[in-house]
Amino acid sequence: MTSTELTYRARLPVAAAEARAWHDRPGAFERLAPPWMKVRVAASCGTTAPGDWKRLKVGVGPFSMGWTLVHRALPKGTDALGFLDEQRDGPFRAWHHEHRFTDRDDATSLLEDRLVYRLPLGKAGDAIVGSRVTAQIDEIFGFRHRRSQLDLRRHTDYRGAPLTIVVSGASGLVGSQLVAFLRTGGHSVYRLVRRKPVADDEIFWDPRTGEIDAAALEGMDAIVHLAGESIAGGRWTQGRKQRILTSRVDGTRLLAETIARLRVPPSVLVSASATGYYGSRGDELLTENSESGTGFLADVCRAWEAATAPAMSAGIRVVSPRFGVILAGNGGLLTRVTNLFRLGLGGRLGDGEQYFSWIALDDLLYVIHRAITDASLNGPINAVAPQPVTNREFTATLGRVLGRPAVLPAPERALRLVFGEMADELLLTSQRTTPARLIDSGFDFAFPTLEDALRHELGRARGFHRRFATPTVAQYPSRLREPDINEPLDAA
Image (cartoon, rainbow, N blue to C red; front, side):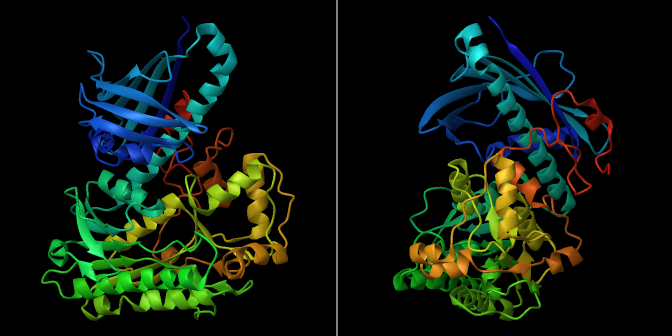
């Protein structure tokens, strides 16, 4: 029976023991799961110690299948740290995956993933889907290695003691990945929840009633506040607009007032805001020093940021990252637009000349991490990539990445008919925003260009093996690419 053998290698910016530990921490699976795949842990036993196991649910179109992996020790005599996964049941006839970590020098290690698998249906399965499965696995491990390199680099940049951090909105698109990222860095993370806590890492609050477990916040190092009603979840009725405003202002004020009264308050409150603060400004270049604009979202953002005042008055450092449009392969605007493009319905919105300030999800996590750990950051910071694009440029780039046409424009009148006020505030607004304060602080963006970000998030990097603009990450790893292993991590 035919087996396929693949090996993937990448150099990591930490010693082998730390790389191995990173893979065993809570959150590692969530960070390694490609965003374009529907995969989650349905049940698990332990970590990756021999005999422990994970039961996954993997989405395949409208269906899902189970996949149980049992962890084993590496074969005897292996000169590396690591573990292996073997399939107990699932989509393959057989699956054997060795994770090996070997020191290269005092500060770097080699990650090597060795796979041996067999497809169902024997030779017929190989002939029908063999090359497609191999190509998909190539993309998956390219993504896993890129994200491992990037996350570990950010964690090594922080040299302080592990922190205790509270996150609101922890189940959302940003919050769920932020919790996973922070935990893989060795930090302890607690989640604010609006129901009776059922886990040790949960703390109760309810902004609607003004209730919060203040005692549980004593002695925390940082609060990250992300909770708020979605602004893109439906047409803006008066009731919905009121919920968008109050969910942000009331929750922020409750947190700010509560931590201001604590005996041992956190040193920093990172409270989300948005580039909607600036309103629609054409091609004007916007920095954190630019005045606020007009419109509903500008009003919301001003009130949102002002609600942090009690914390500032108590001497707590407050950072307000103004989020641009977040590009993530598993939710938000990008998923909705991508679905249209795959149906051949993609195209510019209006005349396409409005500026679009965006940020890759991973970069947003790194911005929040920097805001937590860098005491020099204070006040508003534009959490956007350094290269804003027009809507016309965005749709053309997305079409190129997906291999789909972008030729069906949506007229302004039609957008206003369908979306009402939201069309002007979200779809047709123009914000050419630059991250001036982040750049001044020396922050390096992992994905400074739109095409890099889209390919990373959508699983389209195959055949796109070129270096990141950030000089701290090696080339995209791929099968048996020895030059990447031997080059220094900061190769230009």
